[in-house]
Image 1 (tube, rainbow, N blue to C red):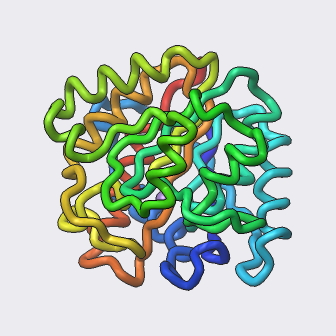
Image 2 (tube, rainbow, N blue to C red):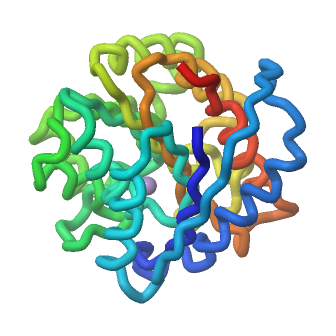
Length: 264
Ligand SMILES: [Mn+2]
C-alpha cells in the first residue's frame, strides 16, 4: 500500500483553506500511532504530490496521472474533496463494474462546476459517466441541499442518512453497507472527515453536528478494510488550521492506520 499526500485546497471554493496542510499534519501524527488496533505491522511508503492550488486542471492531471501509473493500493490523503474526482477517474479506467462508497455529511452534488469543486465532485462523476449511480453508496448524510436531495432521488442513489445510521446502530449499519459494497468487483472508499461529529473532528470546513463518534467511524473503517474488493481510498477535508489540540489530524492518522492492509 502507498500513502499519497495530495496537498490541495484549490477546489474548496474558499470554504476550507488550510486543508492543503493536512497531508503533512496527518502523516506526522501517524508516527504517534504506534500500532493499528489489530496490531497490523504494515509500514506503508509515503509519497508526496506536487500540486498547484491556483490551477485545478493541472493538479487534477498530476493526481490522475500518478494514480494511473500505480499498481499498488493507494490511500490518498487530501486536501479538499474535489481530489476524489481525478483519483476516481484513474480508478475507473483500471476497474470494471467498480463501486464508490462515500462517508460524508454532504452528498457533494450541488452544482455542475467543471472542473468539479468539493461541493459537486459526486454529481460530476455521475454526469461524466465515471460511475453508475446504482454503484454509489453514501453514508452519514445530513443537511443536504434541496438540489442534492433531488439528485439523489432522481438517480436512485443508495443513501444512508445519518438519522437512519444512528437508528440502525454502527454494527448493523456497517454490515448492511458492506453487503451493498461486496457486490462490486472493485471498490473505492472516500472518507470525508466531516462525516464525524465536529465534537470529535472540529478541524474541517463545513462542520455538521450530529455525526458519528470517532469510535463509530473506526469500527466501520476497520471492517471495511477487510473487504477484498477495496482497491483505492482517500481521506479528505481535514483542516489543521481549524483543528483543536490536533484531535482531527490525530483521528485522520488513526483512520489511515486502520485502513492499511497486508499485500494480497
Ligand atoms: Mn465531501
